Image 1: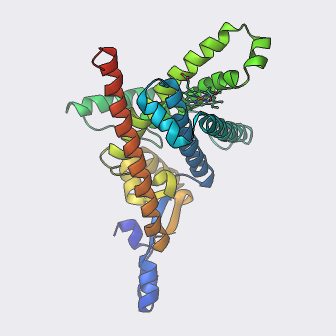
Image 2: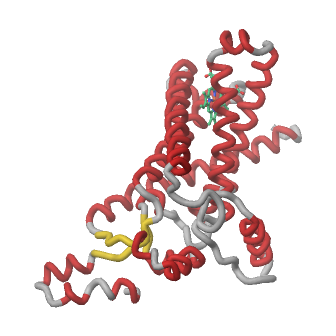
Length: 303
Ligand code: HEM
């Protein structure tokens, strides 16, 4: 039990056995994400997965695996409908995030840049360089604030990617209307940009950045659940985000982000869901790894 947990339990320890047992299932945690951001992440995760599985077979439509995937999805028609439905979910969560940012700015809920914000700054660049030195055993591990440089990269690259993929996607969805405003060749560009940016996004999400940091990184393996759970033990928080923790202790604002969580049956049941998500993510990453090998072999003419 952590020193912080211990401060919560004494008054409960004299209670009857059941009450004491119940009290033991409470733990003080750091609330990192509220319901809004957890839902936004859930919608992103589900819609992105659907878009990838319905879009990629179109990009590689002449291959056997694409035809098999299309058959499994229910045919090209069904895939096109699912792709458009997931695109609407994407528009919805993107609009919600934009609204959140607008309200954040208008209501002056906090700083727009600097310590603790999602805006990239000089410290991120320094942290990234320190991290690479640490990988090579040539320096200490960087000490992180609320968001690390790779989390900021994840967030902003997804935002930019959504604008690019979404914009070109809607051009293809409404070709006649697009051609009334723009020259026809723009539709060819839209297809190339949509398709290439989609491949890049799949690489970033399924393998190189997001999957690695959420599942494979030491400390996260087999899965970092905080975006689903919303909170994590205070000791883990103090260790992983020491700069934010120390700032809050100094400012006296730590209490604002601490909550008492009951870890009971629901938590255990949720574990099943977390592991299911981990397995799906692992299949996605493995599939993308195999796919990269297939692309490389096709390029050099082996396949
Ligand atoms: C708002 C978001 C999006 C919209 C409106 C959209 C729309 C479209 C449309 C209309 C097509 C043409 C094919 C068809 O008629 O079914 C298409 C193709 C495709 N989409 Fe999307 N899409 C979106 C997001 C995504 C995302 C996030 C990915 C993957 C990361 C993706 C991957 C693809 C791929 C690979 C193709 C096939 C392109 C080709 O034939 O080379 N799309 N999309």
